[in-house]
Image (tube, rainbow over all chains, first blue to last red; front, top):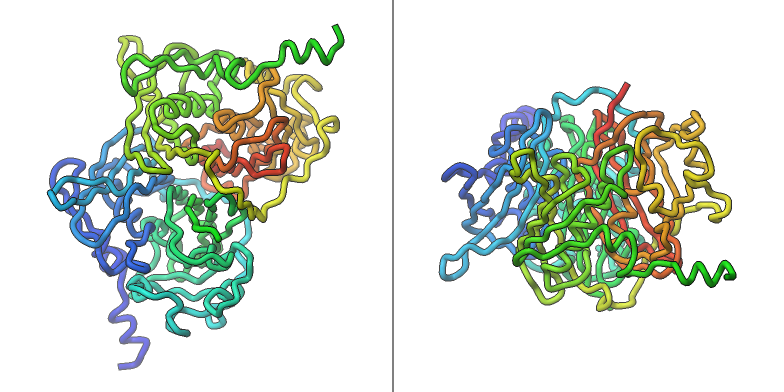
Length: 286
Length: 286
């Protein structure tokens, strides 16, 4: 079979993909959703924070009267692990164009008690009803074409431990932000990459919640090693992304006092700034 | 009396100032605080969002075991008005160095029922225990010296309606971001000012929550008129501010679809980037 035809035959779609299956939630009662956190979205044995946010976003999209996340604020409390979980949502306010909800992701301890992993506040709307007036002054990141960028498959695995998420992403990093992988971190708090899902599924508002937290930490380019756990992450989804690969550009400018911020911008193939996020993360210095 | 001596005699201090009195909360029961929203922090008849955030921050600082806001995420639900209010807090998780809480600001309808104004998630810590390692790559804003900047008292009031907050702030705007006040908006989403409290009280972590939302909207420089209500505001407090005036620099780069983001940076007199925030706000286009 010609390569293009076989690729088309197997390419995943929004609603039928690894991402959709692994972020699916099963309503148990009004506002209560059972799910299984997949082991497929781990990085160095930690479940990726953006994947977790997408799970919560899926549940809130079902619970609230508006379909799309507009602004989502998540505080990460305890480390999630693959396995059974529950999302409990609360509708805080419903309005004509925006609704606000709260959601908690919980898992179970050895006695079966619920332990809260993440709590989220989010305001939802309908991206398809937004006016077309676009006056964005920001410009897409300067990143080389995809064939000049590199993914994990192009070199030795730079970190030990399970990085299953690498198999689920199409990630091609700007060589200017890859010094860390060669033992020569640039010293600049920057990370840029082309981003997609490995099975070819196009981006949608929920997968944007994953995209903002799916690149290697800027801390690596700042010469820091080890885990950079997210304390809090807020994402603004501003536009339904066009089909095709995304460009993600992350910047850190305030590494101080054992914390840093990561500002992420996500640009789609139509050069729209479709999502912006900022997270506060802890670092181990020295 | 020499001017310097009388100024010293009347200058407010952290703990004894307009800001402290107007953000004071009175514990009614564990986690429940009564208060009165002051009419003194209104802009065009709306109670300033940063003042409201400071009120919530005050209550959470009392309720949680850690004293200082590190990251606060607020979703604004309904418009607050001066008068009686209550803050209800919940402790979500307490840890060794960070605690997380949730808080709601509520007021009363004509029947005396509680109506939620704002819901907040916040993680608190102790700023005084942070290591001294500062590797901030961001640089303070280019803003002229204070005597070359202008406050509301230097010109006619540009907007109608009650702007009581102007009497409580020392605000000196960069003339490069004042075109709107002269009918000639620059078209750039920027607003910069020297910021302090009119009674001379120094800044502290709580007043930083006010500072990030106390300047005129960048929308004015983008040629938009009217109200720019905040949907969501997340503030990172990174450092206890040094005494003396602050510099606040706000940028908007993504005005699109009837929404815009405002990114604020707050710099203290020691050139530390003491707070960063991003808010999502609605605009009226056309």
